[in-house]
Amino acid sequence: MTTTAPPTMRTALAAALAEAVDADPSLITLGADGQALFQGVMARHPRRYLDVGIAEANLVGVAAGLARSGLRPVAAAMAPFLVRRAYEQLRLDVCVPALPVVLLGVGGGLGYGPLGPTHHATDDITLMSALPHMSVYCPADAADAVSVLRSALSSGGPAYVRLSARQDPPLPAAASDGDPGTPRLLRDGDDVLLLATGRCVAEALTAADALAADGVDAAVASVTTLHPFPADAVRALTSRRALVVTAAESLGPGGLGDRTALTLGREGPPLVRLETDHRYPPVASHEDLLHFYGVDSRGIRSAVLGRFTRNTRKA
Image (cartoon, rainbow, N blue to C red; front, side, top):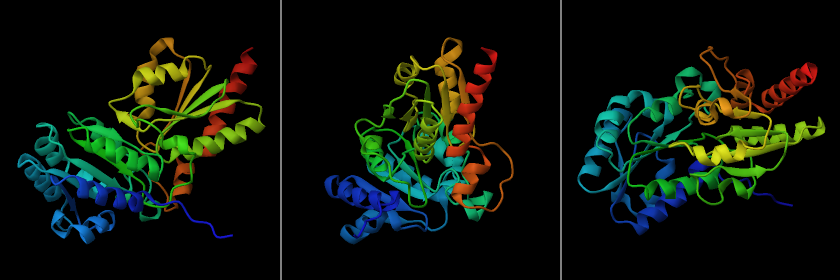
């Protein structure tokens, strides 16, 4: 039997972007020496794509200028360079005036694993969440990324979408159903809530399967929108669980664990935050780097079992 691999975020968004450009004459696309996302646009509307070369700061400045002229730009580049090289332009040219520029960062987090820390962007969520008016999304798979793109294009303000660099693990359809601004409950369970974003959603689902064999009933929810954070919906999800574990391949400040801690405060259930830190990583695959920082399925399972073991000993 022939099987078809699920699309990558880039291939799924390439088709969605071409359709969006078809439908909206004000939409224009820009890239920084990376055209995979815009192949459909270039084939159907070659004058609606601009390539600025390897010049991310210029990319953002040009996008801001086009937005001021009444166009609606979608600009894409590799995440580590889009965020860090263009940060001043992002803040002053796009975010302070709240221009409708959609920014697609390919390879956020640890997606470019073996290329080393120059190509890692575990700080992108922290930095982009600190910008005024910026919406920040971290989709879990290709279908979720398409849902996010449509939402961002209709938002009317600046938006950053962290995209994966490679093939994503397949997820249930519920991971992309409905409004990406609301967390999705992918698996119900009474003992613990695993709250994850991006690639870590797949890791959380794998951990939940392993925990079931351990006798722990784990719920799993996916959070796609990190800023503005869906605090009320997260508070509702956590209300009847004895433990919450967050998992994200990003630094703590402004990330999923940080936002969840602020949301729950002292009145909520105990919270365990799994996130990356500033250790220098080995040269390794994406999967091995997730394990290095303890945000993979094994790290999530260990965190849950460790907390339950301590509670049992206290009892």
